Length: 230
Image 1 (cartoon, rainbow, N blue to C red):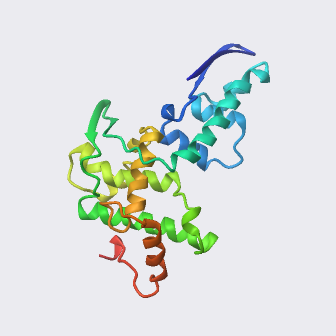
Image 2: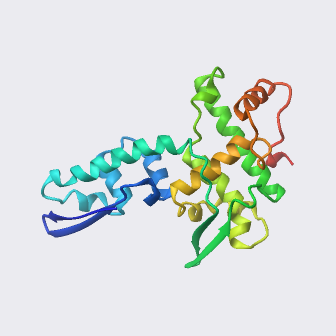
Image 3: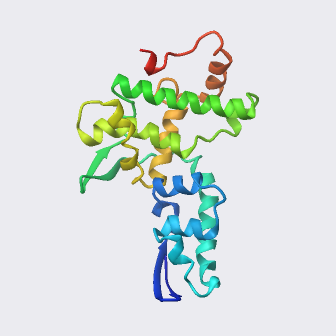
């Protein structure tokens, strides 16, 4: 973490932001990715949870240089994280103000059937959108799922495991707010596993990108049912 006390027009302001991806939550990284025309103060505000209006009251703009460098470093680190296969053994989130820890590595299948269908649809739509924008040729070399899609898939995967409740599609779809607590270094490798395992969503396959490409080439002949059609 980088922490500094800055002088403002009305006193002092304590600002602390992450310097490593392991300190950044999925929710923070999603906010950065989804923000249009993201400026330095916007990024610092998201990572520090300090409103932009308060940051604007800092007297010397040079005080933000160290923070801006950290934001730039994080943006470079996220590119390499998409290539990480380091799936955590456990994850911990807060539910009803209490920490809940669940195992991950022992069971990497999306269950039950409702969660499986919903997660599969999200992944299929994400790949289809990428191909529609950039074409089918060599798409696997450039495809990275959006953090929003990753968060949704993880919400379906973790909902029953974390809450201990029976599957409920609406509740699982809104469970993204809890998933956003995960560190981005935990969330991306887990979600990547499911994107690579599509359409099985259980065991990763060798040559998965080639299999996915073939799947989409055959899409005209066969289209998996969406959960809403069942």
